[in-house]
Image (tube, rainbow, N blue to C red; front, side):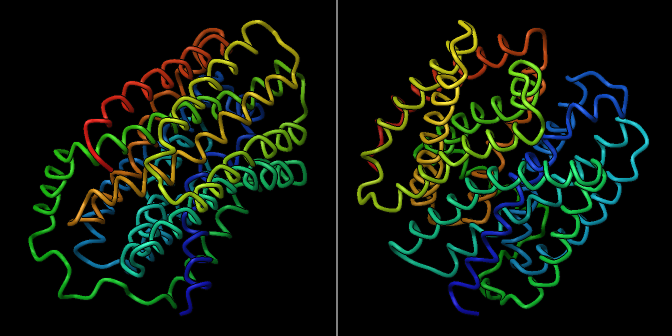
Length: 384
């Protein structure tokens, strides 16, 4: 399989995370009526998906280091299709949230295994380049996901929206059967599967790795606070239709792509970390101020775009610098890199639905930005 085909497949697998969280965002107000549930309860389905993505990556990492990359990927795609059918057939919000959790658990495999296949298959500058490509794809996914979801929702129903997602997973399952295994048997973990989880201990103790991991994770948490609240803010606060919301969401998310693409041209990645941190903090404050002070809509849009641009630069930079700090157990290190952002995102998502959503979202974004500043100052004790 040539490089372009491989990276194209890995890009699709990487996009699964954002699609799981963003694809059905235009349906959220409709789901509150369909299940007769509160906005916070519907947002719990976002939390379930993100917590599933977080926990699933922690499980898939050791499995990928012990059993290889291809087998776990195929099984997870099959189970994802089944979980999607469960979402479509849900008769109450509790059942829907449960299958959203299963979607996250199984869909997480693509996020972990795509990164570790890059580490398996390439060396040197190619690793950073292709990580930036995957980050750009992951940034493009939020653009495509709500637009396709909004179109599918307008043409069919929320069940039809999930049917599109399940069909895509089924196609990926068939395509991934032709992928080559990138972890030879001699390099796999030989210990019993339950002992492989002990390999997380040295990764957690690697301060140089954790500093960059937490920095990109809290930047992503600020992004998740915006994502989870955006359907209600755009459609109910600003009065946009589901399709108009999808278009605005896509325009804002293009900042992620531009930011990730800009990283590909940077030769000295550590040098942009302070600028990304400062830019993210300034943009986060502007987003909050624009909402709280009821500034014009275009100012809010510009501030959100800048915030997402900084997150787009921070993500591939943090991932590359973090993995460069790990010499062994890269599958586990990759899993932790992917799981922490979704774990934090799963925590903040329902919090944005408590009380006045404008106040809660603003408070969460500002808090995450402040923590990013503290983490950057902590990271300065190591040389990257």
